[in-house]
Image (cartoon, rainbow, N blue to C red; front, side, top):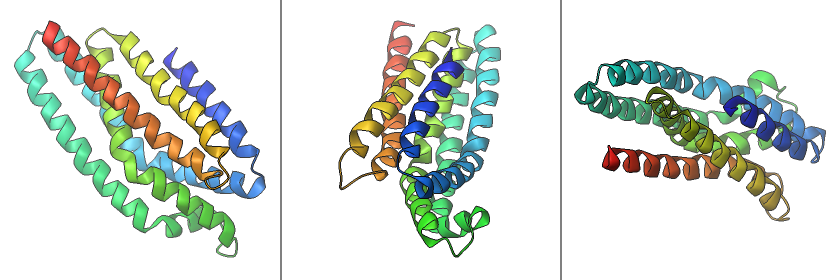
Length: 198
């Protein structure tokens, strides 16, 4: 279900991007590849974190779970922060891996995407931790809810912000980190609720 929601949201956003023409489509296609490489390690870390939490949840080792959570948040914060800085400052060079230097408009649009979204990799990093945590403690429905919040917000905001002439397709780029942040806030609330009730 979670993967289906993700794919549906991505398809809807892709359709909106396509409506802005081939230049924006080309920039988006290249930037998304860089984006995926940038936060792929954080996604893998979230999966490893899920396994760690599940093992200790089954063993009723709350002390190890708490230490693991602190370590995971610190590691994710540091890694995502470093990657965000690198992507922000080297966005043009990264775009030129996929786009010829002569295509300056495409590179410029891709740089804007990377600098907006790349500045908030910490948001997707935390979200992967929430996904992993709630799956591990036998609450996969919360992971699904967080995905719906993240992508639902992204789709709604993408269409709303893109309709503002001064934002145009940049509104689509801004919708992504806003979706991550709102889902992270919901994740914190779900976690606190479980921690207080547990």
